[in-house]
Amino acid sequence: YRSPSILFLSSPKPTNHQINPYIERVRKTMEAISPKHLMTSLVIIIASSLTAHCGCAKRGGERPYKEANTLFIRTSCSSTTYPRLCYSSLVKHADLIQTNRVVLTGAALNVTLASVKSTSAMMSTLAKKQGLKPREVAAMQDCVEQLSDTVDELRRSIAEMSDLRASNFEMIMSDVQTWVSAALTDETTCNDGFQEITAATDIKSTVRRLVIQVAQLTSNALALINKLANS
Image (tube, rainbow, N blue to C red; front, top):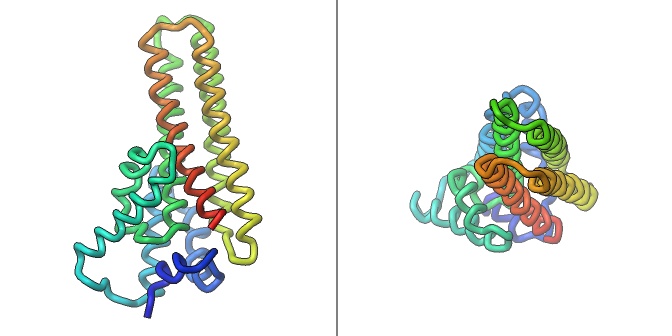
């Protein structure tokens, strides 16, 4: 007997049999959990449901099992633009992701969402820093607005993924690709807009570092989405 995750990897796209057992729990629970724990909770719910559905023990011992999970993440991340960042951001969730591409993609989206929200909050704080010029404050606030749009787009993408079925696979994946692409555009606009003004070197450096990080995470998530969509 093979687990659902193995069956999924061997098929061209997920089937209702593989998606339906846990998707309703994901949708209902996403509304109840706090944003701070959104990513962790979502992945735990999906992984635990897959385990319960399978009802089988880990074969070959704990170490080979973990090695297979981390190898799956490393191999999947090799197709992204920033593979090292992809791997380091997802490997901590290897036991939950296991070898399931839908869970991997959902985890990447949630990791990105958490990073964007953290960056937006930090930039809101920076905008209130004493001594900033009006144009610097305005650019920072514009950036925060762009990141707010990014948060909405990523949330919508996660919500779309929770409705994934074999029957609507192409439509849902197309929608998710559109929203995550829009999120990446917003992040690029944020960075470009701030770089066009004359600002203190330390402020520019901080903003650039923060926005580049979330843009790279978003780019990686989009690459994983594209790979899943084309499977």
